Image (cartoon, rainbow, N blue to C red):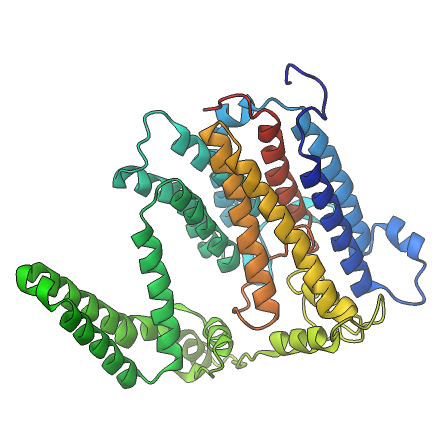
Length: 446
C-alpha cells in the first residue's frame, strides 16, 4: 500500500472520466446491436445472459480492479515487472496445451462459467512493464544496438507466440512498442526503412511486376545521377545503392509473392488484396491447393464483412439513423458486430457527426496520456505511459480502418468499446497502472 491511503491523491481525474465515458459508450453500442422491441430492458441488463449484461458485469469487475490498482504501491510494478512478464509468457505457452479454439485461434484459456482468458491481451501489460523496466535501468545505454535489440526481443517475443496461436491482429499491436523505443532514442532510419518496406509491399500488390521493377531501376539510376559526385569520391556508396536496388527488386519479384502464396492462408491473402482493390487468385495459394487435394471444399473468401460494414456506416449519413433505429447492425447483417465491428453501430446510429465526436474522445485521451508521459520524472513511468498511448493508438487506428476497408480484417478489438472481458480488463489495468504511476510522479522509479 502507498504511504498515503487516500485513493484520490494525485489521480488524473480527466483520464478517469474519459475512461468511464468510453466504457459506457461500449455498453451502449453492444445494447444497440442486441436490443429487440419485445425485450424487457431492465431484465436484459440483469439477466447475465445477454452480451450487454455480461459487459456490464465485466465493467463492475474492472471497477473493483481500478480501486485495487489505485491503492497499490507504485514500486510493486517496478519490482515485479520482469516476473510478471515471465508469467505472461508462460500463460501464452499454456494456451498450446490448455487452449480453447475460438474462431480459428487457439489463444484462449477456459475459466469456467462461459468465461475465457486471452493471455495475449494481458501480456501487453506485462510487455509494457518489462520494456519500461529494461530501458529505465541505469546500466542500459539505449543508444547502443545491443540494448535496442534486447528491447525489440522483449516486445516481439509475445508477438511471435501470438502468430503461432493464429492471432495476427494482436501480434501486430506489439509493433506499437517501436514508437516508444523511437521516443527513447531508437534511430529514425529504422522507422524509415520499415515504412519504405510497407510502401514497397503495397506497390507490389497494386502494380504489374515488370513495371514496378522498371520504376525501381529508374529511382536507383536517378539517385546515382543526383549523387554522382559523392559516388565518385566513395565507391562504397554506389555499392550500397545497387545493393538496396537488388533487395527491393528481390522483395518485389520473389519474397512478397512467396509469402502470399506459401505462408499466408488463402483468406488472409484475399483480405489484404481486397484492401487495395485487387482480387487474389486462390489457385496460386498452397494452403488452398492442399485443401483441394484432400477433397475438402475450398470456399473463396470475399470482402463480405467489409462491404456490410461500409453499408452500415454509410447508411448513417451525416447525423445517423438515430438511437436503436439502425437496420444493418440490428438486423445482424454485419458479422462480429458486437466485437471487432462494433464501430459500425456508432456509424449507423449517429452518423459522421457521432463518429467524429467519438473519435474526438479517443484523441483527447491519447493527448492526455502523452502529456502525462512528458511530465514524469521517472524514465520507467515515462516509457510505460508512452506504451499505453501507443497500444491504444494502434488498436483504435487498425480497428477503425478495418471497418471502413482501409486495413485488412485481422480481428482486433476497439479499446473499451468492443465486447469482451479479457479486452476490457486488459485496457483497464493498462490505463490505471499509468494513473497510479502518475499519481506518484514525484518519485523516481527504477
